Amino acid sequence: GQNIDQPTEMTATEGAIVQINCTYQTSGFNGLFWYQQHAGEAPTFLSYNVLDGLEEKGRFSSFLSRSKGYSYLLLKELQMKDSASYLCAVRGGSYIPTFGRGTSLIVHP
Amino acid sequence: DTGVSQDPRHKITKRGQNVTFRCDPISEHNRLYWYRQTLGQGPEFLTYFQNEAQLEKSRLLSDRFSAERPKGSFSTLEIQRTEQGDSAMYLCASSLDRGGMPQHFGDGTRLSIL
Image 1 (cartoon, each protein chain N blue to C red):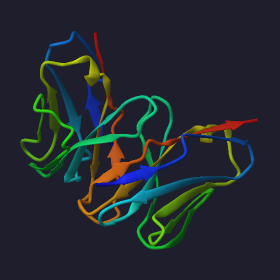
Image 2 (cartoon, chains in turn cyan, purple):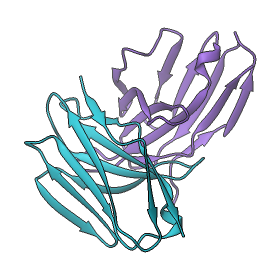
Image 3 (cartoon, chains in turn green, cyan):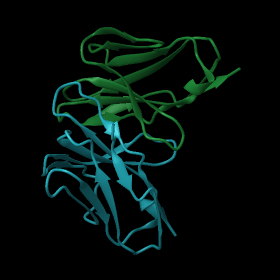
Image 4 (cartoon, helix red, strand yellow):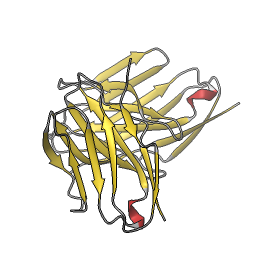
């Protein structure tokens, strides 16, 4: 089975940097995804990591350590529109992504 | 650019009725997934197709749930004898059959059981 853990909620200030952590336990590992989901909308893809290290994409970066079962999503220069739920999803041995419960990020002025 | 589409967007029905949802994936995607999502939770896996073959079903999926993808294109998810606990957002996603390819989600069907 798989177990994925993320903080339930985080708050941050506009313009700041925030790091959302994800820890996982899985039988087999075939990649980790981060998705953004605004209230009432579908999840949208942000990033993918399969090897250890940092992947940078504009204001968003994602890091993976397979030996520690750990990933984080780093959001820089926060904007109000970044207020959303951030979902960590791990693809285990079955190649089917399993999602964590998501981290609700609130960005305030 | 057509994404994943789901129909209907909302469904309200009485307990005990049957409901069917439809998902049209991105045309070149051969993988199709159904998830269920409740408030404050992440998407929970229900079932997965590769082309027309249903390759995996969640152990949480009761026998009241059935899914088909008859020609490897659109898919339907049917819930028979609906119960209050079935109230949720039902999400469909599709992806290419290559490592690292992300899932593209539809906007979901919100089911409310009265």
